[in-house]
Length: 349
Ligand code: NAD
Ligand code: WQD
Image (cartoon, rainbow, N blue to C red; front, side):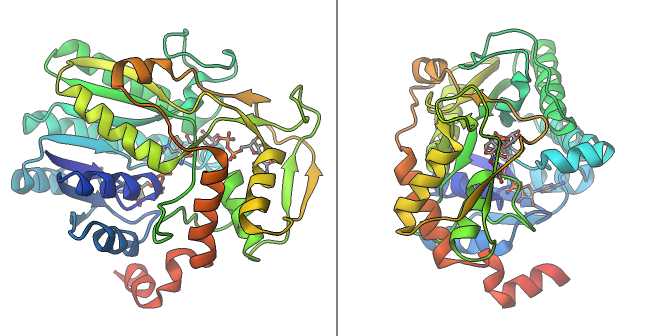
């Protein structure tokens, strides 16, 4: 299949592009490197033995995107591009609404113009908000996220639902990811957040590699087994496979549908730190801090819909996630920036 991947240089995108290349798809990546490095795609090409074709542009630039569709003629699209930092979205909501909605509007207009109506969208467990309870089910009621980032995902799900209802030729998958962590087995590609990480796993990994001093554990008085927050961490390779499964499923199904991509299992903050300690082979300094505003005690998926309808289940456990994250982080202590030539090119291009 000829698949266009927006945001294909990013964390989840790069692993998914590799999975597509490995199964023989023809892959076109559109990315402006707002939050990623071209080195990721070079490494994906090394691993796959062949490359995706890269177009460096802002997905919201409808004319430029139109030209890419005209020459590349994709049959399906996976839409990862967007901004994803919750705290940043609270501080600058307009930017989040503009980028996440603007890229999606431009993409939908261009797809319609070129008669491409198969779309896999990166949604998030954040759409369940605070009024539903774990395990989250896809059909469970009104979606209402607690922050502007999450609200963009709720809005885009709504827009895509309306689009599919207006024209039954659309085939749209809304994939609600839980907490993606881990990295490719090679240690060549992985998560490389800019600045201090917001999320737990890259924070732990950066403490382990000596970039940060200690992990702050946000709250130890939650009503959970050890008092720390519990999440459904999912290996990024399982997530990549979930995208392939969704693309295959859309060959046979029109309309729009949401699927949770999670493991159905919850892991506490302290348990994740312990898994990293085992992978790293030494203690990881951490200390208790007050709760982080807006955090839930527990969040995990009911993943049965994806199993029954997509034939997909997560295969990899927490130990493997920690080992693979650590292989990536220890081999690339400064992330992709260590490749200075490319980092410089990316900064100045
Ligand atoms: P990422 O930041 O690593 O990847 C996003 C990619 O999109 C980057 O390569 C970035 O350069 C690109 N991009 C951003 N704005 C762009 C624009 N206007 N034009 C072209 N390219 C643009 O993030 P990720 O973790 O890989 O997440 C991918 C998607 O999955 C996002 O939509 C995110 O909201 C969603 N998601 C992520 C998580 C998570 O915890 N990582 C969880 C749920 C959902
Ligand atoms: C996990 C657990 C924290 C950092 C976020 C977004 C969500 C989705 C995934 C995109 C919680 C605790 C964290 C730290 C800690 N992204 N923690 N110390 O909050 O579940 O979800 O990323 O869609 O929308 O909200 O993930 O990794 O930030 O936190 O103790 O330094 O780790 O309290 O219990 P979260 P996270």
